[in-house]
Every structure is written in C-alpha cells, then in structure tokens.
Image 1 (cartoon, helix red, strand yellow):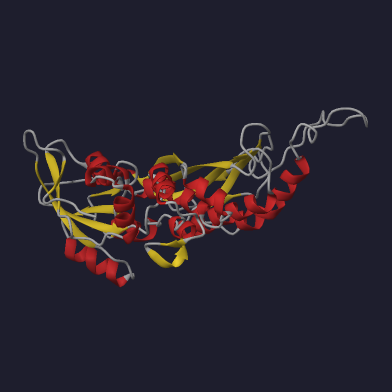
Image 2: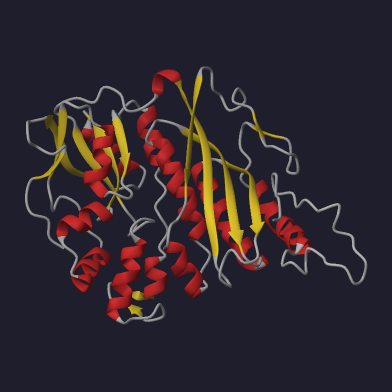
Length: 366
C-alpha cells in the first residue's frame, strides 16, 4: 500500500534488502511509482486551495481554518460516496478524464442540499498495479470538480494492492466536509403549497450502472459504437457524461433566502429521495411531462424493456436536484440570470392515508 497522508508516499524503512532478498517491488508494490504519482498530482491539488486551507501538502493530516473561511457558528456536514460500476465503463474504454468529476459531485451535491458550503475533499484510489498516468488523469478530474465546487483537495490515499483487483481495475472513494451556519441548515420551513423545481441532470449521473451495463450487454453494442441516443458520441463517451455539479446555483439560491429544502436525486430516484426531506404530514405530487427527459433514458427503457416504475426508482430520469420553495418565480428568475435551467415539476400537499409520500399525477412513459 502506498500511503498519501496527504499526498505523501511513505517508504517502508525495512525495504532495504540483499541482492537475493525479497523486495516490496517483488511483491507487486512499486514505491517509486507511488512517489511519481504524488509529484504528478501535487499541482492539481494545490490549484484547489481556498480560504481556510492551511499549510502545504506532506503532513500527517490536513488542516482547515473555519474562521478564515468566514464562519462564525458553523455546523460541520460530512459525506462519503463512490461512483459504483460506472467505473467499469471508464476502465473498459480507457476514458478516465471525468470519472473523478463524478466522485466529487456525488459527495458535494449531498453536502449542499443541507445548506452546507463544501470546504475540503479527500479521495481514496485503490488498484492492483498502479498506472501512473491513468491515476493522475483521475485525480486531475477530481481537482477540476473541486475547483468548480469551491472546495480544496487536501489529501488522499493511493493503495496499490496486488491480488485484490483484476489487471487494469481500480476503485474510488470520496470524502467531503462542508459547513453551514447553525441557523442556515436545510431543510427548513417546508410547508404545504411549496413548489418543487427540478434542476436537470446531465444524464444517468452515477447511479444504476449495473442495470445500464446489463442493457448494453443485451443490446449487443460495444463501447465504441455510435450512441443510439447521441449521434455525436460513442456509447462509452455518452454514458460517461459526468454527474452535474449543483453547488454554485444551489448555494446562491440558499444565500438569497429562497430555499426551504433540496433533494439530490441519486439511487432510489424521485420516489426514494424526495421523502428524505419531507415532514411526515406532507406528500409530493409530481407532474410527468413537466421536465425534459434525456434520450438516454428512453433508450434504456426500450432496449432493456424496463418498466416505468423500475426506471423511476433506479434512475434520476432527467431530474438531478429538486428545490423546494415558496417563491418559485424568484428561483426561476435567479437561475435564468445565472444561465441555469429550472422546471416546475410539482407541489407539496397534505399527506393522506394510503397515499405514498411521492405521487405521480399521471402515468410516466419513456
């Protein structure tokens, strides 16, 4: 294992050996490769520095100054997530440029729905044999998304573990910490009559890829084939479209006092994620057809013969984030001013006996 704590390859003091003795390299761990990776990714990590970042890279732990970041009475919010089997498409296509964006987005989008500003991020990269350029490409994608989200990439762990992974395979984990002033946490004041506004997804995002891969298998297409739903891309490129980052628009709306709650639509879809922000006495009525559904979802449903209710509980189906507000016109106006798109997709009503917390007002078709 190559330990970056943070981004510091730690050599084994017992690794010196006689010419005929065993070495860590003989066992499959290349310390020199780990050092080379650390050197390759340091500029990307440093490019994410922000107010509150303390010290340089190379310590045993990363430091962050909440006061320097402007907080007075902060509550810390933490998230961890991965990318799931979307990684398999990146591995099989050799396209690693944006999978790190997915990793960051899955974490920071969860932070921001609680009203928190992402502050810093750490990653975990594990593989059987370290491929320096592929790993560096992934970390650069992580850094790109951190800069876009305003959080610092302060550390990580690179684990080279011979025998744990098939050749060329790897796994990713992400960890993010944010903060909100104590009185600014979400959800807050969610009430009957509130409007639901959808922020569009960029595609499948990072959930449901085991089902996506099964549909691709049944289709007989390979990753280099033209995407049936996007003529400008190969199937692999289209499905690797990175998860949208919602930090900037959501924080701007929250700071303007326009939001009561937000829901990041991940695994479980709208039926599984909206109830997480609803009081027990309220339900959400969703109007199918009120938002554009990206063509990838129609292709998946038709090619895989997937039922509509299964689509809705596995995929985001075009809705990446739901905003809850009592000032929908102001929210839509601010989104438009920032070059963002929003769609009114429903409202909150009093809960009723034998009524699910999320109800679609008409059949959903793909």
